[in-house]
Length: 167
Image 1 (tube, helix red, strand yellow):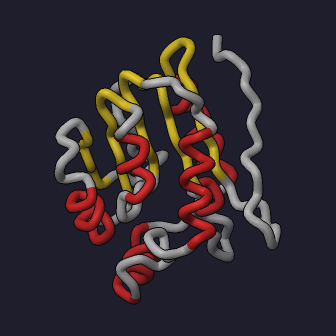
Image 2 (tube, helix red, strand yellow):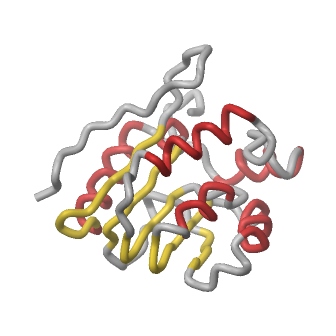
Image 3 (tube, rainbow, N blue to C red):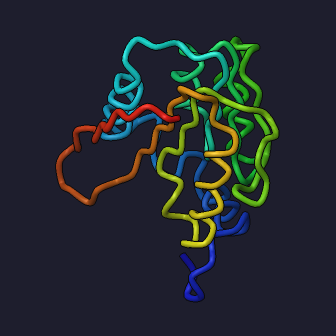
């Protein structure tokens, strides 16, 4: 967050992607690859009608989530990484990619899967609260919210799974 406690805006991410096409090494990092496998595995065998991924970046997780969804909307705050995401999911026509600054912008659809993977710490506390309200408003009954956050350990963390039906 910035010194004022505000959410990181598009400029922050624009600078990161201007410096590197893959600033977090999503395609090459063993940690990231393991995290993605564990993230998808935490969903069990369930298939989803409609998924939403906030902060899709270059689309590495998007491609994996798409295999579990009949349709998937993946968004990011800036356009640069979405060019890679579009190429990555070019053969998955049920995947829609849009530029969107969450939580101020939020899709009008409802979803049975909402994924917020390593995006919340870029939001201010107030924006996290707004995002939570929007998740609740757009999550279908029985839907799944998947939150992934780095826990500051030196080893690859096991996913923290708390299964609680949404009602």
